[in-house]
Image 1 (cartoon, rainbow, N blue to C red):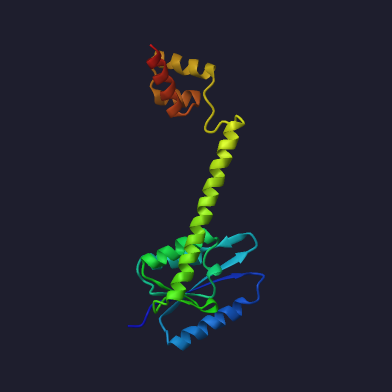
Image 2: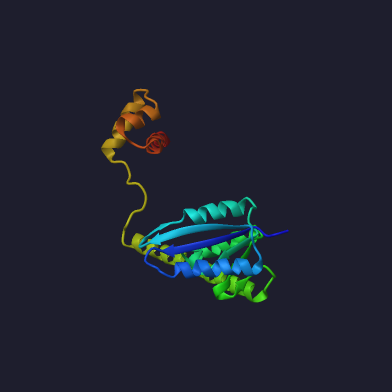
Length: 198
């Protein structure tokens, strides 16, 4: 049975080498004798990247309609190392082989070197995520030590009195929230706190 091959190409508008990349990928498909080939393309222009081609490709992969993904280089596939690791994990779980001819990556035949490369990339991406998490946590702790408050500001005393007065008149929390422009959760918390004091 002939494999269902998806070719993904991401090019820059200012890059001239996309034609040679596509030509190389076409030749690769011809050498392998693949005829059931679907192309997915995205164009990156400056800071903006339209990734609809990748989104369509991943949808096909999740539906089990792709056997092999052919991409010129790994950096064409993911916008960051962690994004790439996420895509690679999804390919593996959907049993889709990955081939990047320019980097010698080919997982169609169980190539141990290709799997090692991908596992190393996954480990580096995990390390990157942990470092980012650690930095964010340290930043939050430092900000809290400087007195920075996180979350929504507490309701003013005047607002609390207004909420409690309306509640005492028999108004429902939803109506109080609307009339005072106070979030519903804050209204219920103000009322609950007042009830717990008595």
